[in-house]
Image (tube, rainbow, N blue to C red; front, top):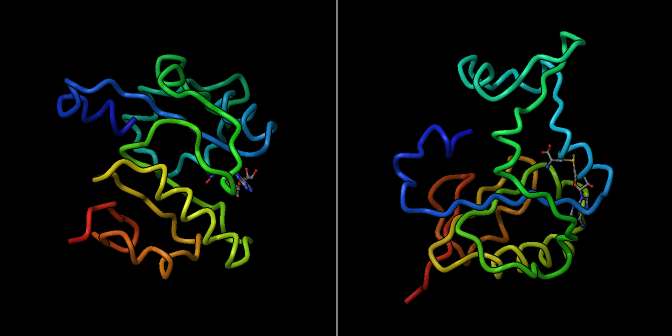
Length: 150
Ligand SMILES: C[S@@+](CC[C@H](N)C(=O)[O-])C[C@H]1O[C@@H](n2cnc3c(N)ncnc32)[C@H](O)[C@@H]1O
């Protein structure tokens, strides 16, 4: 939704968005794209009306296929290196909270290796990895960039 809203800036880009999870159930659920009202609280009304349709059960909304088709979902274990080409931006949110410190370090290494030089990592508030991101340039508490250190 954010990319579409700012598509003028991305006119010469070929956008590919990949959502990953280790759980097949989570992937099925992501693919369905059905959300209750509470999950969409932070979505502004204009975007809600543009990109979601209200389902028969009036408390649920489903992502329209025009938006869903922009996203590909794939099974991936964050403990393993990413097999896809490096990314311009990676978002991680609400995943690492229960990982032990060594596992977090492995995931952080894999995420950084999966970023292009200059690419950004956006970290959710509950990951508990801020102290492991020293190799990246910190723009804010949640936004980090992979830059060649001189
Ligand atoms: C609390 S949910 C958050 C889902 C989503 N990121 C969100 O913010 O709505 C945590 C997700 O992490 C996934 N997960 C747990 N261990 C994982 C791993 N090693 N690799 C990839 N995903 C994992 C679980 O399957 C679960 O779907």
